Amino acid sequence: MAYSIAPGSLTLSRSVLDRAADRRRDDDWLEKAWGAADTQVVAVAGDKIQVTDDRTALRFVPPSEAPEGLRVFLGIDRVSGAGMTADGRAVFAVLVKDEPDESYAGLREVGGVLDDREAGAAVHVIGLANWHAVNTHCANCGEHTEVVEEGHVRQCPNCGTSHFPRTDPAIIVLVTDDQDRALLGRNEKWPEGQYSTLAGFVEPGESLEGAVRREVLEESGVIVGPEVRYAGSQPWPLPASLMLGFYAKATGFDIEVDGDEISDARWFTREDLRALIESGTMRLPGAISISRRLIEGWYGESLG
Image 1 (cartoon, rainbow, N blue to C red):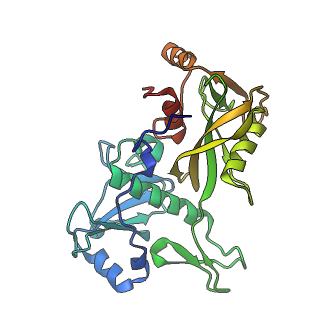
Image 2: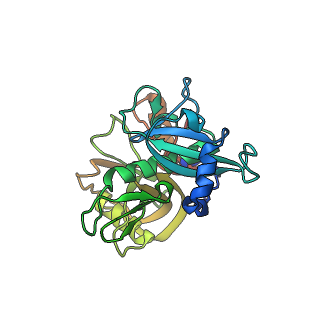
Image 3: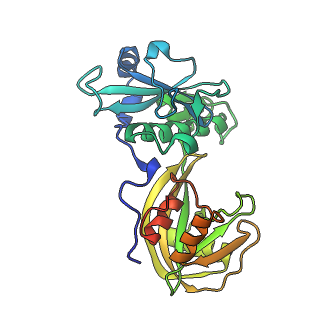
């Protein structure tokens, strides 16, 4: 398995902001940063973030123009400008309760056109927004929690339990056979003709390699042998996953789909794939997905 994901091609893994976690408890510094004219703030509503009119960048405003909402500190931009101090420019988000209008966009729409700084900020804050939306009460005693550490912790005022954002690890894998064909499957709910790599969440007490073998066997009936190689990772904050990409080699090739998550699975040669895509009868996952990058890494070049 000589193929690999092209360096820098995982769109949502890009980030240049210093998260500056040590500043989240520094109230004096945070208030000074919020009062600085060159501090930048972006609004988030649900899993959508505010963008410019041409929908190619995030819409940042100074704190004086920011809407009302839960303030979240995203970090320090040490690249784009000097900012309020020699540290750099502070970057915040505000989580608003309003329904998103046409000035907002989701990651699937704009993730591929954002620059490194904005892509990193977007996945960070959308992940936090989704976490806050479903973790309003203490899992230990049921009391309503309070937001602390500038949006990165929820504290229970009753029992004192601290609740932190969680990320669910999920494997995603391109499996090849002894003829170097790729195993791709589809869910019946997907658009007609769309195929992708197989994926699934890691279970408690399970290794990543174990999850690869289990998920592939459960979904397709294909047996994965000892050859499982890590390829890269990408956050997917919809709502709270980290996609861990792998290439794996099958030792048992008969396909028997589960009929639940996967309705059809097939072995594809590179020639098969190109012909089906060019004929318009097959479509691949979007360009921002790690699945697409795994497939292109095996194929050997971009597939458009």
